[in-house]
Length: 269
Image 1: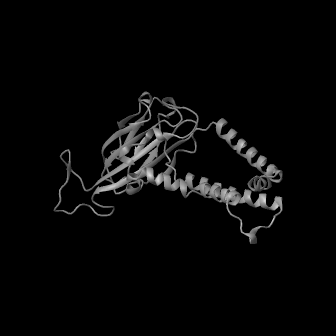
Image 2: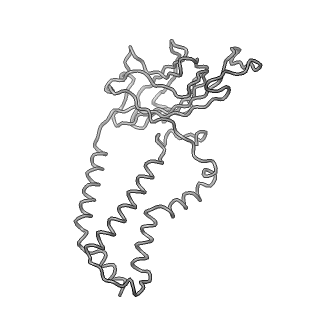
Image 3: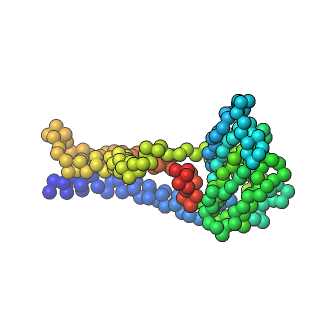
């Protein structure tokens, strides 16, 4: 049968060495990822001004109070903190002289700080008052890999970006900020099922599979009926498919949610 001959020609043994090299490299990378042991503390944030702006206070004709105290502006900052390594982080790892704390801009005061969600209740994640009015202390019993918390802070600072301060044993490089996370498009969120189907159909890997199938089983005009060299055709096919897969993987990695699934919150989606 013609399609069997086409399949055998494309799937010749000439490209087997390249495929084995790719499989070996993938196995080496996966082995490293499974066996590595890191201590890593990471956070992302989302900030917005509820009242007032970055540079200006509220107009004099407008008076806003929080618990009977007049405030110049109201800013909300949400920060997601988690253990992004493989080693467990314990309460004893927090250095007493430099405790773990959340800080907003020096021009503001923290009005309230609350925990919206934790990965697990057993980690005993808590917030306490700090000596400085623009800081809040963070404590926990322990954090296994991907354990963490979602914290909401209402404050009066012009800065929406928080800072995570303190010293943890075994973490001399400090904490890693992945910047501001973005909420997904609301329209896409309402049609999530449809968007997933369209994203799969238009994904490079699906297009590559469709093109491969068309090349094997589709019509072949007479002017294209040329028998190519097995080596060159197989190498070209492997290069095209690898390019599509690499593009898809890079796109998926760049658009992923950066914090653990255990800390997803409907209010942030």
